[in-house]
Amino acid sequence: LLWGIYVGFVLILALILKIEGMSWFDALCHSFTTIATAGFSTQSASIGAYSGLIQWTIILFMFIAATNFSLHYYFLAKGKFEYFKDQEFRYYLTLCIIFSLLFFINIISINEYKINLLTFRHSIFTAVSLLTTTGFSTEDFNSWPAFSNMLVFVLFFIGGSAGSTTGGLKIIRTIVIFRYLLCEIKRLIHPKGIFNIKIGGKIIEDDVVKSTLGFYLFYLFIFISTALILSATGLDIKTALASAASAIGNIGPGLGGIGPTENWGHLTDLAKWLTSFCMLLGRLEIFTVMVLFSR
Image (cartoon, rainbow, N blue to C red; front, side, top):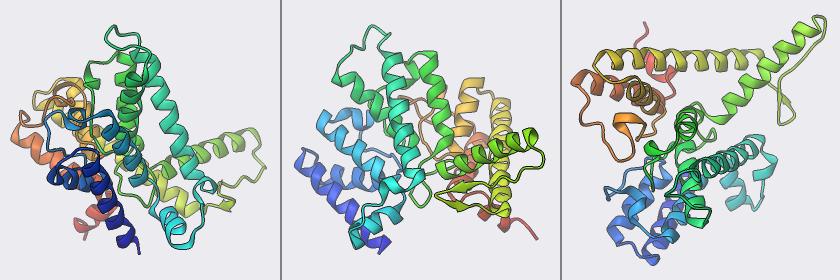
């Protein structure tokens, strides 16, 4: 059923893109890389090479692809609209809105951007593309102000929903970690109190919290280690940090020397091997790969 839903989305998007003006080849390529949140384009300018209508369509389907496919199943197979009942989806939608608005407010300070629908579209597209770890682009966000660059860097880590095609840490893990931190603060204030971590009305077991915390720490450890090695290969600090975060988060474009108008071709062989391994680690959720190297 999930395969059917996935392939159905690919075919629907390809048909829509063809109607909106793409060739069949481009429509199929972009459909595959949108639903897979892969982000490869047949154009050097990525989605920026196409019309505003196509960009809005890609925004919608990137958002759909990074949503938990179980929610799509409930809607398409059972006719149940469960999206807003899911706590992770509500956080996901909220993050898309917040980052889009922050980008919009920040980039209108640049002379080339005006307060209009075009600027708003670029803001939404960049926020959704990076949050969903798709990596398409319509503008060179590398040239945006420092605050926007910092927002881009934060988006490298968050990821979309669990049960979707995205990379990154996944929103549900971040929710669990924040709930855990709040519980620890409450325990410090009320040492004799009993506090449970709840998501969607269900208590999260300690083993799940510990494994989530372990994943989080392992993810950050790999990111820091990779960034250090990349900087030793001669990359500047901005490019090294962005490359490490982009690789393990399966984003694609980054900041500095690997920005949306650049590529990874200038990296040394060591850097390419290392980031290739990080891409596998990130997509296979780290522990899956590490088990292969254990006794």
